Image (cartoon, rainbow over all chains, first blue to last red; front, side, top):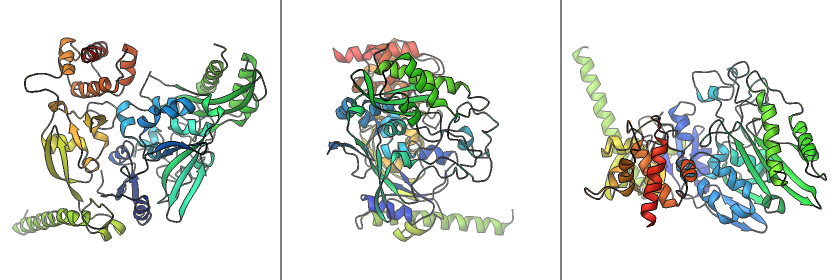
Length: 327
Length: 211
């Protein structure tokens, strides 16, 4: 690791001021991501501001919204009775993430800020437009089994690794942010950026802005939600593809529905087309298959990841059959 | 190398050590002032504007297996390296050093964490339990005894991490079935493939503690 100043602050505004005032400044929460990136030379902040002991770890429901503080630990959120009962997709996504040791330390804010697992990004010996703008993208013609089938560009096809972000995207969550200019909130649907020609910019945050929490609207949709994650091994692995599904049913038909997908795009991938294919219809094998086809319409697979086009449809079908009692 | 070079070299070393020492003292003074708890060496002005010129250090206290350990560590030292290289407790193993294998698992305030993924300065003031802190004199911890009884290792490199993780897994109530143990011990890899015996050992120890 390169040398860095370390400081721990007791107020969020102090943390923001310190990082905003230093171009090489970075926040650290649980440390389970930044320490690896620093060891591997992917990131080299010269000031690390520890926000892990800020008083931002509360988990509560008020005025019809679930509030999760940014420094709440993944394990504590997954285990929280309100999250488990009223927002099952969030709990399931968290429990399918990482390992118990990591979940004891990793924070919600840090989870949303984690970087892609693209092996070219993680290897400073490789070119990577996300790590070093303009250096190229070896994944386009290289080992791209893990990479995007939707939303990629000629500059980057890395996928976002957070299961939590996929579940929160399905539930229309918003991210609360504190910056040098004050507070703002960003809908999760606008939080992550598609790579385009600037893949080094992962999200909507400006330098010095700190995630202080996440808000999720409580609803019958959220209560009827599921997360399915398909991995190369049974546990402790990132998603090959994943599905967050939330729906309500009225008189045997799908009332409202939200579908978000992981492992297929540079950001959590919401599919309004697949949702439209289900809304107002009965859940049958036929309508489910139609939703799957709508989901992969326009997909652009690469040499080694064409299997994802089929796999993500099967994953969607599995979740919907489960929610629809068709199993 | 000429005499002159030698002389210059030692003078440089001397001044660097002096600076480091002064930096460490400075950190204490900063920590005591204002609403901001600054651990890094150097003045607040340094922290605010400029990259560090020499390794910033911090004075920290870890309570390791019940014993207070005061250390001066560079900010970039992981808890794992502080335990092994500074405190001298080498039972905690460095496997991948990237949080993927679990060999470095310790308990912090009773919760299992990967000590390679946290900085020692971040754990200042906290209670750390390593594998050396489990036995009571010659009496092994029930999880240690179960690992021996069930032959739950071959090379042994992952074992201290497996045992620390298992202690927490049982404490959390996640050892109720073989499937549950496999899921909740998934953060600990064993390249020898002793998983069936590890599951047996964890289940044994869990049942023993439930009695």
